[in-house]
Amino acid sequence: MTRVVALDDIDNKFKQQICSRLRDVDECIVLPQAHISKESGTFKNVIMRLDGSVNGLDPSIFNSNWFAGVSVVSVPAEKAEMILSSESSRRLAMQKLAESIPSELKDSETEVGPQLDGGDQDRDRESWECGFDGPGCCVGLYSALQKKSPDAHLSGMTRAHKNYYIVAKAGSGIAGQTFHARLLASLKEGNTLDDCLDEGGSPGAKALRRVAAAGKRNRGRIMRIAAESFGFHSVNTIGDNSSSLSSPNRIVVTACDVVYNAITRSHSPSGRAVWQYTPGCVEQSLSVGTVSSSNLSDGFILFTQPTGDLRFSVRNQAYNCIPFTSIRTNSNREVVLKAVDEYVKNMNSGSNKFVHPDHQWVHSHFAWCSKKFSSNQKEIEPSPLWGTHKPEDFVSDYGRELGLSKAKVVRLNPEAVAIAGVEPGKLRIAVKAISSAEEDLV
Image (cartoon, rainbow, N blue to C red; front, side, top):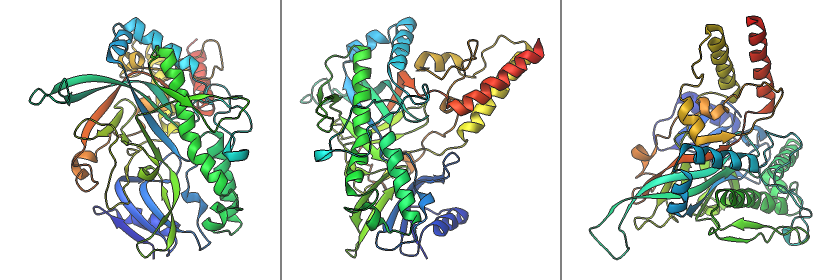
């Protein structure tokens, strides 16, 4: 039977689901906020230790959003406050940013991320476009209150300072999708993980290296676009050494960069080689610093050193991992249908009130560009703004057990953020339903 370890009591049904999808030779560590996503049907906030030498692994345990993550870089407070000084300047900056970020959800012809197959030294063979590769992507300006002295050598003068950051959340794009398709096809043929991910396998070790770097490279380019859009010209950039020689590019030098949905080769306490898969968990071995997420409106949680240094590394008995994703309560389809119902009710009642319950705040802090199906299309807020996730609830209860007791907890609050729009398939249904309701009123 699969070995399942947890920090606290876990639901028997959830444990049975883990055991039914893993093998007797595998191990699973269950972290706080662990659940099965209502959107993808995959496990979140669990650490899977998979035996790579034994076949028969269920491919459905893997999420297609491989090596996604969050990147953070600090920006000058005085310039950030100029953007946020008035409602008009904030909205103008947000809209400009949203229009400048390519998105697969906005344009069906857009293909985000590098190709999985590279040339010599793992370089790209051709140019590629950075951008949003899924409905959970975002980039923008976030604020935080951090307690510190006006100067490092001054003691007894600690107070709250308002700091600002550009934060980007995105995945590996086409590289991750291709990697996922090849891995699942290989596993279905009866191959082991070692066969799939070693040199000469499919997708192979080279593909694993490429997809592991793709998400970070994508976020680095997105952040460069965001910094230029906001006018933060002091943000440091560096050449992307994996870009093709014919199309060189630059990425932002980040202060923090965390990765989740990763798979890495590791070893068990007995010395046996295993593959560690971290769906919805921060993979510390691939990350610089530590960040977790709450829901979209609540922002992110940044863990820093007591001195304020952003590069805090977790050390705990859960293989140095912490939860990243908060618990999903509704699928994207469910909340889009909920939004449609609210729009129809509002039209039938003849009310001029805003449909979204937090309309004013949402539209003054977030901007997006969805696909256009008609000229008079209603502007429906993206799914995460209608409540797809709970806020995080693990830090206060499990901070000591997860190795976070010595870290300072910094809440990153959204100020001017561009997010991915509504998924085209769901938006088409919503637009049609609202249009039909409007015609019935005529």
